[in-house]
Length: 197
Image (cartoon, rainbow, N blue to C red):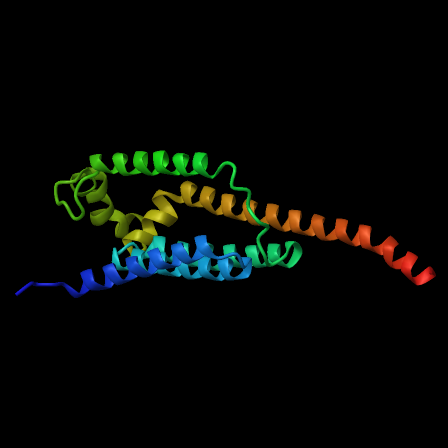
């Protein structure tokens, strides 16, 4: 009898849904559907991070990937249109080669990583990890270790990540507003000409 862990079944199911969502996104030409499928992909990613006990990363993925990104892409679609322009097939082979090389390099880079859950991995035997576990409650006053690491020990890093996301959101909103103003400037003279004639 094969001993199958329920967590493994959930992981395989989530990964399968993730692959299906990615294939649907690649094959779809309706950009509204692509944006919605992208939001589903981010939520599935957040669920996988949750099963891996990375709740802080899951929360960030759900908030930024499924939340803010989806809203910004929907705002962009309101200005540009819902359907993808026909693609030129001239450079598809070169793009596919770049994707294969990049994917191969990323997979090759994972061979140096320790096995999942390895108790002798550097993160498990580090003195810094021991300090976080033993003293973060006393030093920071926050009972949750992950929160104390993100909010205090890595506070500048978290502030930097937040600033990057905020800057990206402001940049996209400024571009959307500029495009909308330019369209208004172009269409107003045409409306006047139509009313006068």
